[in-house]
Image (cartoon, rainbow, N blue to C red; front, side):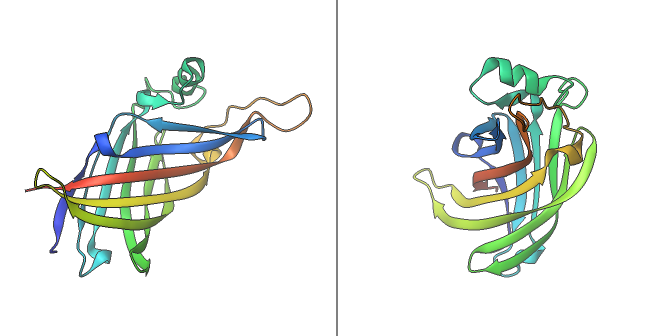
Amino acid sequence: MSTATYAIDPTHSRIGFVARHAMITKVRGSFDEYTGTGTYDPADPAASTVHIDIRTASVDTRNRDRDNHLRSPEFFDVDSFPTITFTSTEIVPTGDDRFAITGDLTIKGISKPVTFDTELTGTATDPFGHERLGLEGSTRVNRKDWGLTWNALLEAGGVLVSEQITLEFEVSAVRQP
């Protein structure tokens, strides 16, 4: 396999997050609309690249009221900041089919570096002749670093929404001609 450009197949991928709710359970969410491209060089993975654009209004936690709150100015402020972006700045092999993908994550106009622990889950040619590449990864961030500061105190102590959020993805990317 030589260096190639890939595009995320959103029908076979997921970009999401996990937050603690009331400090006792996890709430999972995802974004339903995004695009992403990258290059992959199996001979020199460090020369590879990734760029993703996520539409903030597409947030989905399976609860309409919560989703509308996340779209509001108290969280993503989708009218002022319609897109979250990630652009890689460095890809470092960390083991067999494992990589640390570092890049700039921009939310609400604030860019901060983050590093995703990533696994190349495989390559395959699908029944339609498309070459595919699978990737899975995650990282933990403090949402307050991007101005996502809303919270509510609980009567028994603690807060409603955790500051630490796990960002995660499972991606199927298709090789471009």
